[in-house]
Image (cartoon, rainbow, N blue to C red; front, side, top):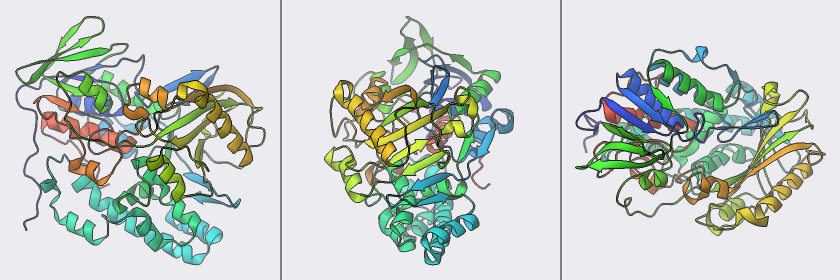
Length: 507
């Protein structure tokens, strides 16, 4: 068998001078920057009043909240998008390294700080779980680091047109490392304590799959979180979108907000224009679609490809502005319930709410007090729940309010004393809200990263029938999460320009 990279990626044929990007999410913004850096004229249309898409901002009575992702890893990908137009990250964002990246809380009352420095983390693991577990942690770091290096260039930061594109020497190395086995089985080879097993495998849920079903190659998510480091931009994750948009505008990208695209006009197998709700027709050589994949296809004539897709679990988010502060918590906190495998089965197969919830609590005002009024605090509480395809329940009815009350009760039982009495503002976001935003199955996490929806098996970023329509975002390659979406912007731009631009993969 001959191994080697494909000599040339498929690109958009014909003229590509004017590109219309629909949607100013992080993927659309990154794509716009890479295109502008390659000399394309770019018009970016966004239905909202500001950039960000899922990485939006909610302001309630002086409290500011991120409405989407709250965990930032690999800021070098932001730097790469900015560098495409000659800008520097430090001129646009003020980043803080979170130390700890997370504080993990367990049902027995113990907690473990997840620290990006492997030496300090090994000491922390030894202190909480014993020296044998610390030795396992060191082995895990080396394993996960090797996985990331193998996967990044060949399988993540690369446009893949068919399964044969996977046939590189690194695929053999990945197979030999057990990358296509089960994640939980691989994690269990390094750790024996149930606490560390959870800390280094729960990230599979970011990919929409339970740890005992996810591929071991997704150990790289834990690597990015717990070894490469977690960062916080002043102003929240929404500040990333503002930075990318600001740089794009400075370098000639025309950004138009409050502009809703209603359809893409097609002629002769090519997109020729987009139409807006105001009746405007904007001609285009290429159209890039950043909405959720199902919503993107709804803008196009004809039907989407007939394929059965599996979606990630959804979530309920509580945005809480409070008078209550808690000195023992960190910026990001993972509160694990007693059950583990059963919890994931409830979310991904049974369509039930977690009987013993595990929760993410982010206290962003701890790092950036300006996000709350003086003496006040912000809390972002995320509870995974089944998506609407698996559990089509009425979240707009009594369920949404009741579940929010249940979650507040869980927090109080887990040490957030007086949480209910401190609430000044509360906004509850459920799968019904995500669905109204155009997200299929009511989930902000798009398609699950099952084997059949990973790499070249995931929906591609080139439309199968329209030669100059390109997709960008979490529903296409490489997948879900802020790093992957930023990479998707670069990959989408490469389909148009034929150039991947400067790469930071070796840094």
